[in-house]
Image (tube, rainbow, N blue to C red; front, side, top):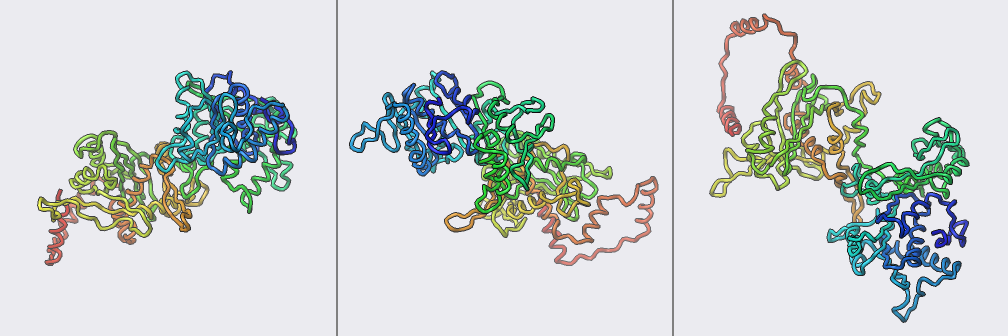
Length: 633
């Protein structure tokens, strides 16, 4: 393929491309040849790697050696016009001039036989340039070859259609015979944290790369001969003298110089890191592999990333390291939270856990439940997470039975006693299971049907509304199902703020108020779910819009955690005074070790103290009667 690539910019403008200038492109080009059996080739890349010019050269290779319809997709009309005027058309002209070939028909203004800006015609087919974010550009002619350029920037269409699905539809005629080929390439965009890349909003090229055989360009250490991929973690950044930056060999700790890097890259090789059925060729190419970059250039980009005109943190990930960048908000990284796990017993209430609550998020296939204990200074302990699998359409069956059994079972505490969950919040606001939630909670004194309410300024827990009515359409006075509004905005803000607080496990002298304790028993899935949202503020049509953005599909544990916080507020987390907390502590914590005479002492004290009559006013009696009716099920 080198005979199809005439460089149209850079220091070697006008010359044919040589493999030694970008040796990592050779194997990619081999996979793109019509003789190779693969149908898809993926390249996750950084900038300044030459992969884009390879995609254009491949299009000319098809027109020259295996002419057939080819579609070249780009994320916008601006991308398309710039690519045609600055790269594709100059490449066509330079290639045909140097080789003497006349493969691409010249542009003809008065005839439909010639090429246009958006369609390059040749004998046997045409190269169609398409705006991937316009549905009509991805429909029409049957296509055998295709390029998905900057696919990470392709956006779902207004009507909900996915551009990649529409693009693939062009190849239907060749799917049975598997005689088509697609080349997708892009700098990455957003990393949602999903390991498989299937979460909504996850970078498209990263998702495809994860499904490939994941080939990385490896170089040989000149000192010990160990083959290795260069990663930023081993990059020795010299802040005072960027040109002296080195790379630390992971095997022998030799500091690889820029000169040694160039030799290593030119003699490097791809090593696949994933195997299994249905994996296609996938390549990662970044600044460490590119001979258009250097250790000095990488160091300068990193040092200047935060300055005006710098790449920014996201740019370093995307454009230098060739990696998707994690969305930054007030959601901490789940890996860091997992490192904070502590060795306390699962479903055992700690000594300082004076309020014991739980939250439940109801799904159609089961119920997620998180149990949390709170202390006087708002520290909390996550005691466990459960998923009760089963149907939830009948409040007397399936997952509801399992939740009921869990709720009535007492938990052990740190003093050898047992405690029951004092308040359980069950989400009844999703609309799909509202009636079931209301009915189940109505029959249990310590269960509260809640509905999450977004927006700033909404209290953690508000006055409930009666949702049951009589046959005449009036609200029931007694025995009515109650739905409690929960202000999720403020509770999430508090929770994420607490997650960022360092404690003893981070080297601090003490755990601060509000610190969240995690047990070693908590699974990775729990941490993925509690970090599944982040707070974002963006300008939309000239106005700042603030909202919680979902990063991952499953956020049930986060919802349940927030609902548990609401129950703690209901029980007085923010309103109790020091005396109230002292009374709770006295209630749950034995003042001394009991002995055999404790019972006799209490009996004697009770016999000595005469019972005093209790006077009840009319208002108090009326209030007692109302409380009695409220407790009815």
